[in-house]
Image 1 (tube, each protein chain N blue to C red):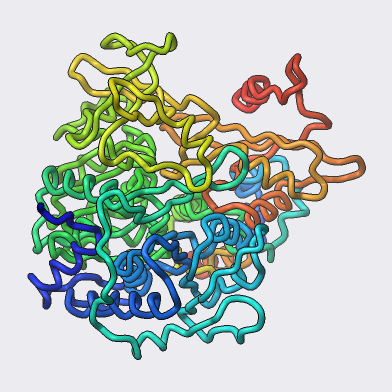
Image 2: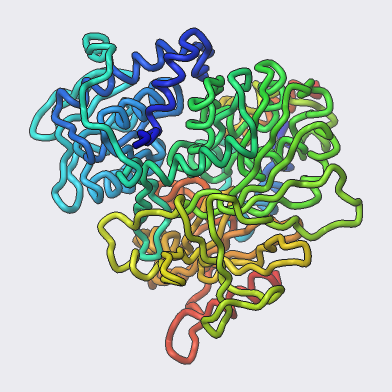
Length: 526
Length: 83
């Protein structure tokens, strides 16, 4: 019987094969070889074993991107754990909810975010041990056992002796925006990850000479390609800090200076790079693959990118967190000047199977629109502690389990899928999936707010605008600045509404629900 | 200097904060660090200032909240560039 190659085997195999090649280049400039990176991850794994983490236990990561957080990811995987990454700058209540929801046994946290663990979750959960990076650990007292990252140096640099993981074992949980106002945990197995990485091998043909970027945050599904494809092939991974990642003016220079070969990000940052990145003055001749995913790429900016980087293979990758990339489309060498409609999301990847279901609940005939369903090895195990949601997300067809993406598609004449929109009130912005209900839930937290509605609409060029309409409690004066500040305290940056309007009372439908259609018309009408 | 500030105030109110009253957008209100402007809106603002005043900001300036957090900070930097 052949042995299954796990996600952490990628690193261990490369550490044997190319020990002296650079594995990770930290935002600080520090370059770490495969041998050293593997040892760092082993130290993390040994610490986790020492604090009682066993195969299947969840371990939180609340750290900036870099060699430390990557060592934590591989350390967790090496000891059979399940990593749960979050945005360390997100509101502490949100992160505390995530970590207590999946009951992390241990966690890694940046000094600036230790408050996440200073109170138990709503369910009373407190992790057993928390290691602090970037500063001193708080003194213990009732909460978790705190440790400082300096303590890792005392751990053995060899792999702990733990049972091997199999293809169906849970490997990571990515929390995405949920309709109840609470994030939901997408459970992904070893094989969910490896089947996708293997597909990337076939399509992108990486070698140990490649230099990949990691632009997306680790709690975002784009990170799976970013992290594991280079590790599998012994290539170098250049980690882009949260700060630099937003600085479109500096990223062209970053590509030039580091001779990057493979780039992957959401379209919005690439659009900004074509506008503010002075890409025509940067030597990006090293680039051979540029992937984008997460939202529609406005053709106006895609054309500029094509013109400034005529030599690269440009791919539109599509897929929800629940399946990761399941369709892909290679952007042609030239984009006609008159083209305005976005390019297709393309054909189904070879490790997936698709099914389009029409309004009547039956497979839609070719060329007709319907909901896209995906089956195969990359499809999620389910939602953490939510069997009902898991049940609702799937259908069985011809004996196979298909995931409902909630996206409406149509197949064009050449067999490519065209993305038409989302079924529910979920929108995508800057590549992030946003449930409008979660924004409303945050707005309702403001003491002066009586009613809140969040709506989203696209403007010319494809950008998604989030608009919030509020009514105040009697005697309360609500203002745009105050509401933006309130939103920033309660929501990640990408969910903060762009515009606000204030009404004495929100319009209602005949059944007494908020009339979103009327609000949308008002917003669009100006 | 006060011209630049008033211009900035008008532009920010019109483009990013429609509906807000003028007196609430004070010179020292943190815009970037308090979440009122996100990184994309900041880039739009920077691009607009470069065009309007025929100046150029380098990446280091654009990413520095010491310059690009308040109307005061932005007006100072623009003033230095055109002066």
